[in-house]
Length: 100
Image (cartoon, rainbow, N blue to C red; front, side):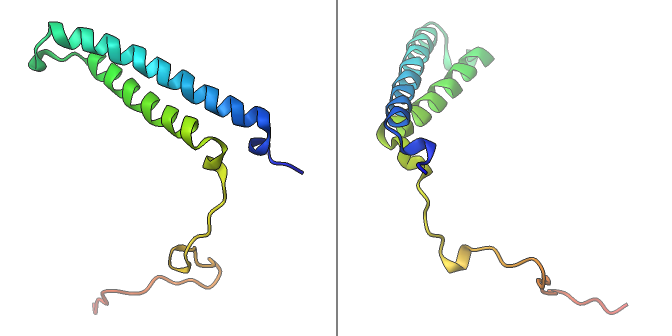
């Protein structure tokens, strides 16, 4: 059975969604630029900070979806060093022993 992200419709949908996020980020960046030209750096408002966050998130997520697409859901092999230990027989090592 195919995974949902391996279908052609999902591939196109993810990439179109990435384009849409980039377009929203572009519109927010244009508005932020217009606001930044009329105010000094010391007078930045919380709305300008919100627009900055929206531009960053839309740009990052939109680029990832557009360029990588369904590859975001590919499984990767994790090195032995970073794998989780079984929780049944695991005891945390004692670093400091206190004699009271």
